[in-house]
Length: 151
Image (cartoon, rainbow, N blue to C red; front, top):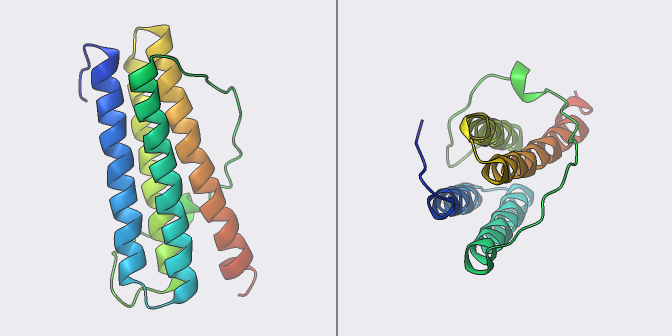
């Protein structure tokens, strides 16, 4: 696990992670042949861009607000097999891939929070984990609404 020596390193790391998420969703959108799938991934890329902008603002201004929001977890992703991105990926597979990615991001930020000694840094990581949890929940709801209910 990466060791951080100051808040700037943490923010730079989180900013890179958010940019990686933007790139991931834009790549999935570009690969998608289905317009609905493409639009969903473009919207998530935009949301990740907003997260990155918020982190950049925190880095520049030095202040941030945290939420204590609890995000529900439907745990759908835990019961699905891993899928690989392909050009002709189904909407179902795209949702599974997105859920798994958000779950991994949540775990990463949670693990970093557990290792953080500074309470403010710990809170920042927990807040970032909550954001990833919200994304996973949104994909799980989408999966439940459009995949599970149709079958």
